[in-house]
Length: 394
Image 1 (cartoon, helix red, strand yellow):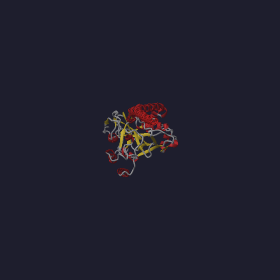
Image 2 (cartoon, one colour):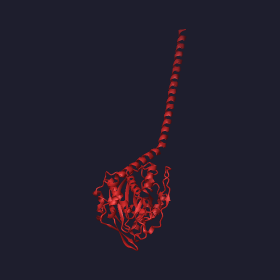
Image 3 (tube, helix red, strand yellow):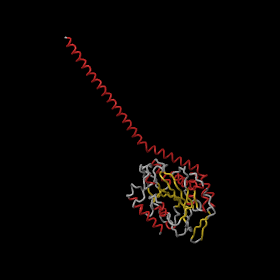
Image 4 (cartoon, helix red, strand yellow):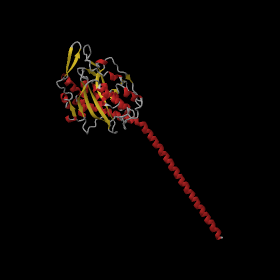
């Protein structure tokens, strides 16, 4: 009840424009609405009204789709810096874990937002939403480049809203499926809205704050999530579920930001995340099966495999190479995007130079004509003076 009242309070503040939502100043026009969907300029449009009264004021993406959008727009969003990383775990089975990344536009004071990164399986969703299907859409960017078909709908969010009262049923279900990795970006920039996509009680296991000299950007986080998704495309409840996906991202992010134990605050039971998120303490995940009794999955049994494949030491160099390739793709596309404008500028400059040459030629011609006219006047005066002198001589 208190949470609903708090959400209603934010709804009222949003509709009455009590919270300013400034727009970013340096992002490409085709990418700015992705990371900052609502601004003070567009609050009266349909999306803003939906964001006010919608049960899920977020947009679902895949990390790969976002990367392709950045490449298509020739903008790596390097000015969107990560300011805080929060790692959550639900308090009910299946103890789903997810990460919230807060970011800000360092080029525009006061412009900030957050995104949630999580993993489910396409055939292994929360028990109260197993029949929900994710719609598929083809996106078209502002520059006309078609985006590949990808998960991009509000319906995708519904499948992540697990019931806080129902146990996880494992009997008769497969434990593997295609991974459904999501990047969920807030419309309204209100952190309390996480309650609308991750309902029920949850525990903040760890909070990581980048040191002052950290420059890690949203693009780097998306590249990391995309790298892990690409190399681990199968959701396996026992080997590659949300725990491993989230903690691998957390662990590599910690390494990239050069965070120390002083930069990370954890609960007592999860203090190991300050140095190794994939260490796994002696904790067991207890899932309930309706007809076979409790099922225990000892996470420490899978730790070595996950660390070997996706720990910071294992993938950091491969990831950096992948991110360098992404940056080169952005640079090349930016050059292609700017080429028509550059050619137009060059043609305009050539025309300006030609007009200037014509103007100088006309000026030279005018000066020559003026000089000739003065010479004619001088000769006329000389003729007059000679004629006058001849008359006086007579």
